[in-house]
Image 1 (cartoon, chains in turn yellow, blue, cyan, orange):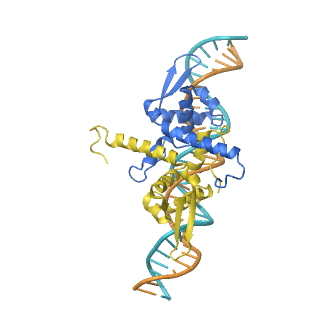
Image 2 (cartoon, rainbow over the protein chains, first blue to last red; image 1 turned 60 degrees about the vertical axis):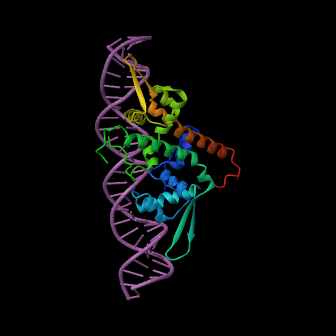
Length: 121
Length: 121
DNA sequence: TCAGTAACTGACAGATCTGTCAGTTACTAG
DNA sequence: CTAGTAACTGACAGATCTGTCAGTTACTGA
């Protein structure tokens, strides 16, 4: 499984961050974990209704490989796994919350906006 | 030109942000503009040595469409254009700087790295 | 014995993204 | 008259990403 390459100018800090957080789902997964602390595979399915199982498994796997999450498997039946942020993963808190804060603000100014779009959504 | 779709759960704030900032280059372009204030097409070519001209033009165009940048064309010969952040674009400051700060820190702990860095990749 | 369950994995295909190449415009310096 | 310039644009192709589908494991409860 080849990973996306960010080989821009040596040490662009933004690209370094992107390396871990890029993609359609990773930052959202992290965001949920910052809120919930722990997540099971099935929790994420609920939290991210749009994601396919394949993607979820892959993204979680990559996040574990990158050292952002730990995966704890309980050898029970039916199986159970728990994902948590590592300290390294937790260090992304400022990044993820900045994104969340901006998005929240943006969503508000969209939905609340003027009276213009009272009809939609 | 179809754009990537982020249609996850209604109003996930992180996804809203992603919508503007996702992709390999956009946040880097914004980052440079936060540092430099103004950038010409040729400036970006220098700043982002890895980007192709095609991509640069496209990303700039999208950022303008999204209302994050303004484009000012001087009708001279040879032509000259200047890109600047709009207030809306400037509002992303906390997001971009959080990314830059994290990346900076990460780069440092990488280059200096002994074995202290058990968690990363 | 059989269906049901959680948490996956592999193969594959279509969508999306990114880069390469060639060409454009309107002028100026040689 | 030609080459050079900045800032592009369109067509196309290969790389990468994402989703769909089917299948796996090791149980449990009916």
